[in-house]
Length: 258
Image (cartoon, rainbow, N blue to C red; front, top):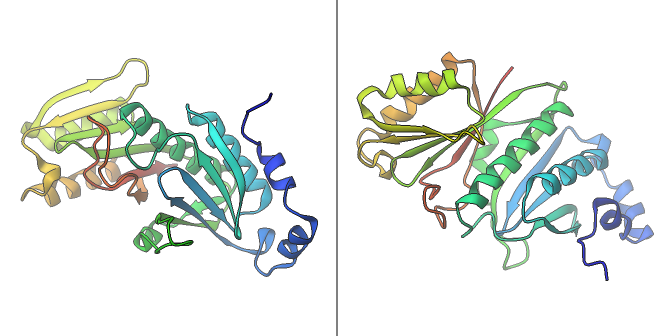
């Protein structure tokens, strides 16, 4: 018996013809819209609203390849397409899963930029938008706009466990620059030789809201800017639940440069 989750084509082809026809005739759908939304919903799924069908297929493929536990289902959810992960990447999973979901979002952001969909940084202020069915809380909503296709270099920064800064897909030059900016506050810096990720440990617990937190964040933004990076989006992934070294203290930053 084949117990694999339905693929994108299988999930979308299961929509009744009448529903598919009505969806095709709805205003501002697919190719007609210049804006679309990606929502982190509940603890284990993302929802895609008003992305054209070829783009939802790309996102579905990226998530299935990048999430190590696999995808449980790809299915319609109201006017959205829902991708449900195995496990709970947005709640209580451990460090390996927390690393993996960051890489999933990096892959999605990169693929969307390549396809001509750019994330709007200001839309991060939408945050949570209530509940859709009385039980499923929409945690984060990212708005995308049609732009010229772009090949970008993405990285991820997360503020974790009170005093750790994790850098994913960062260059050695950037890591060195951040250490120089933080100067005497750095206790340790490790680079994983397999993944290339950096972990910078700072003195004290600056991410717990000390008086220096704001200064450190502004210095970090300046350093990113000096290395050509732009803060593309900041996302609250898990509310600080689960994990050990990756127990988040704030929103996770996704930055890019040309």
